[in-house]
Structures are given as C-alpha cells and as structure tokens.
Length: 127
Image (cartoon, rainbow, N blue to C red; front, side, top):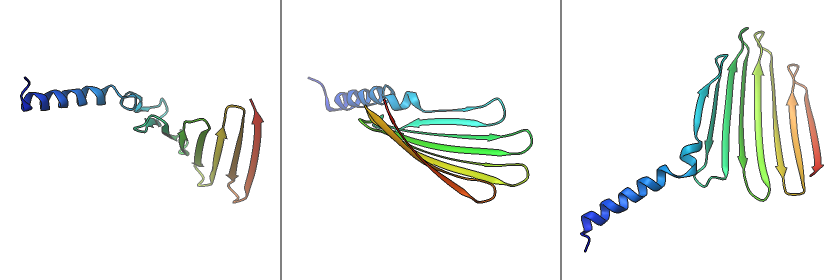
C-alpha cells in the first residue's frame, strides 16, 4: 500500500512532467534580430491562441513595431497592427483583421499615412 506522502509526491511529479511536456512550453520564444530588433511568439494554454510581436530600429533611427494575435479553429481569425516612425518623426500605422475558413476567407484593414489620411480596404477569396 502506498502512503499518503508517497502518493502526494508521485502526483506532484506527474504534474511537473505533464506541464513541461505541454505544447505551450515548447512554443514560447524570444530572439534578437541581426539589426537590433526583437521577435517574440507565445501560445496560449489551450494551444489555440498565438500572439507575436516585432520591434526594429533602423540604421537611421526609424522604428517599426508590430503585434499580432491569431486564434485557431474551424475558422482561423487573426488581427495585426503595426506602426512605424521615421527619423524625421513622421508616423504611419495600420491594422488588419482576417478570418479564413475551409472554403473562403475575408480580410479588412486600414492604413494611416504620414499626412493623417486613412485608407480602408476589404478583400474576399475562395480556396
């Protein structure tokens, strides 16, 4: 017969092994890029939500930042936003949302230029 202490330690050991073998622990990472930027990716605990981000600084002092989130399923849904600032201080930004199912997909987005004007776009496609 196993004592209560041995059963508790065995249960704790099984939980540690299970948590290190989960897909999320193997999917999270951050790394530096060749030109001083950084990339990162993480996966939610259920394995269906992915997030990522990118930052870069150019040789002339301009910066670029983007972030994205995707949720996997029968219909995959993603959102992405980005912005860039040039060395002269002018900024551009944009965002895009997309959903793709097994037979078709659609995407909508907007872009704001350095003069403040915004352009919107919409796209549908079939697989």
